[in-house]
Image 1: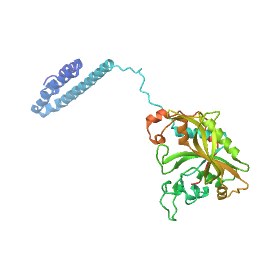
Image 2: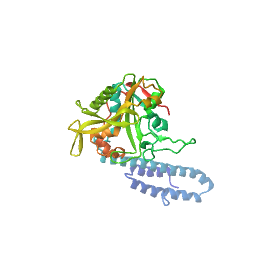
Image 3: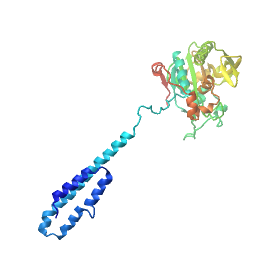
Image 4: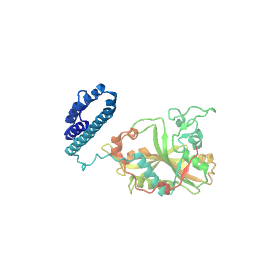
Length: 363
C-alpha cells in the first residue's frame, strides 16, 4: 500500500491549488470517486489479513475523512470569493429616495363635526351623547310626535322586531332623544349640542339611509327667540366664514317646538354651484323653534318656570354647502380618490375634552 502520508500531502496540495468549484470537483472525483486512488485503496483492504486491516484500516478512513473535510473547506472559501466578486460588480445606489406613501386625511364629515363642536363649545355648550338604538318614548313620544305622524311609519323609520312585550325599538331618526335624556337625567339649566349618526329609510342625491345631525338645546328661566336668532347667526358666521351673513326665519311646524321656523341663508347659484353669502337667493339650512310646552311637561319641567329653544341641522348637508360637494352619496362610497380630493389635515385645536364636559345618555 502506498505511503498514506505522501498521498495525503499530494492530494491536499491539489485541493489548495483549486481555483474554482469545477476544478475542485474534478479533484474530488479523481481521488475519492468510485475509481479514485483513495477508493481503490479502500478496496485493497479486502485482500489483507486481519492484522493488516487493523493496522491500515483506521489510517485509511482518517485519510478519506480528512480529504472530504479539506474539499468542503476549500469549497466554502471559493463560494465566498464568488459572492464577494458578485457583490462588488452589482452595486446598489442606496442614496435614491424610497417610494413615498400618501398621508392619511380626515373625512369631511369628521372635519365638520370637529368644527361645529369647537364653535359651540366656545359659545358655552356641552356635548351630549346617547345610544343609536332608541325606544319609542325617547325618539317619538317625549318629543310630542303623535301616533299618526309619518315619521313613525315603516316607510320612513327602521324598526327592530318586537320584543316579548310587543314593543319595537328603532334606529334613532334624529339626535333629539339625547335632548330628552339630558333633561331627564339632570337639573336645568341645559345648554348642549347633540351630534351623531341618525337613520331614515331614504336614498337619493341629497339623502342617505344613514346620515349625521347636530342638534342644540338651551333651557333656562329667561330664554327667548332673540337668543335663538343670535346663536344661529353666530354659528353661521363662524362656520361659513362670512362676517355679514344673511339669515331669515320662515314660519314652519315641528311637533317639538312652538313657534317653529325654517332657517334660510343668503346665497346665489352660478354654473351649477351654490355660493353662500352672495346674491339674492335663499337656501334652507336648518329647522328651529322654542321648545314646546308639552315636551317640557314630558320631562317633568314646569313650562311656566322654564323655557328654551332648540335647533338642528344635517352635518352632511352643511358640508356639501361649504365645500361644493354635489352628491351626498359620495360621502359613504369609500372612494379614496374622492377622499384625497376633499380630505383634510387634522385641525390644530385644543382637545375638545378640555373644552367641554360630556353628558352621556344611559343605554
